[in-house]
Length: 118
Length: 112
Image (cartoon, rainbow over all chains, first blue to last red):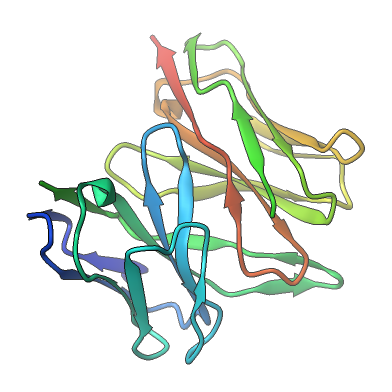
């Protein structure tokens, strides 16, 4: 049971190059997320997929696209990388648990991808 | 949308002392408040959470308190140990919501 697996762990791009970050989870979770982490700014949601077949924008979606390939996999694509996209990217998954009216959204994170755009 | 502010951004404590991290949230509809710990080179991991129908929750050396009226919640770590050194994030979420809004994080350093 690997949890959430992200590839690659490190990547260096030149401005204008494109790349896809891969994420897979083996916990049979319905929801998956992509975050970016910048110093002092916490975790900011880029896109999420509440369930297979759906995707929605988060707080900072500009410059990114996503694909929910199947229930296990959720990829993040940078079509034309910019230096402002230098960051650490985290994928997470969750299964929404409800206990009566109050709900929990426990998210499980991958180890991250460190991306530098020169 | 929801806005979560977290203070302090860095915290240095002597081993054995207590550490307190505070968060405020803006949306009164939020009712689930988790805390995540991120060790160096790893992704965040849930350490404790609290729902709005309780005011306090404890798990060994960590505890969370929630003041719904003031819209703030806190993480308390007692008898700190070197392995408590990490970045801690608070977050908030609404009922039936798939999204968490995270605070900016607190880097905790426990000095031996």
